[in-house]
Image (tube, rainbow, N blue to C red):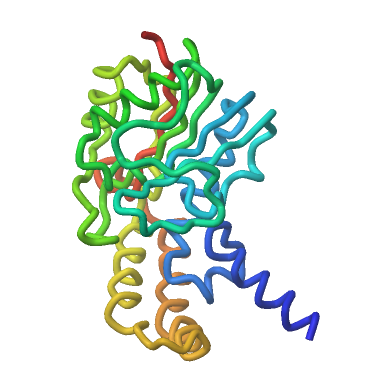
Amino acid sequence: MKAFDNIKKYIKQQGFAPGLLGVFTNPFYFARKGLFDSIKSLSFHISGHTLDVGCGSKPYQNLFKLESYTGLDFDKDGTNFNPDADYLYDGTHFPFDNEVYDSCVSSQVLEHVFEPGQFLSEINRVLKIDGILLLTVPFVWDEHEQPYDYARYSSFGSKYLLEKHGFEVLIQKKSLNDISVIFQLMNAYIQKKILINSNRYINLSLTILCCSPINITGVVLSWLLPKNNDLYLDNIIVAKKVS
């Protein structure tokens, strides 16, 4: 029984930090690996007292060495019972004083914010001067978490928004800027249209059967074919509060 529990735990870990097994079990292998690797490579910029905005299950917390890590999640109508969140907010005002955090992490959240200027202003408000924001936001992706999916941001658009709200962009990367973005979109389609059975074991079997060949093909072709900086999955940004 313990061995079975360990297997389930390992498979669950493949959700946000996929390794070799994730090629076979995770229909979002490319997207999640791209995010994890990018955040890990930039994690040394995040320090001190840190706020995770839109924290979800805090999947990247262990990548950082911090004094404190506070998870904030969105709760517009009182229905969010996220046990991993330390605080909830109504989508307007963060429940913190001005300039209390040294750094902030927000991954795959901005596209769900109807007023991005207000959102970034709140992050700016709670950060200290020279505080660091690590932000990820999708560029190419299907509509998800409907109806709370409002925007997609190019590298130029995200930079403009950050600079408009008191940040200086220090680093800007593009995740999955190769042929694997096409294969990830294929698996995203399969996940929504085929992997809809409520039985997790049936879905796992279908993932292995349908998605793993696509993952494997995408891995091989991404080694062989050139990158394309005009077509990519996610923006990965490190920005500093300057005003």
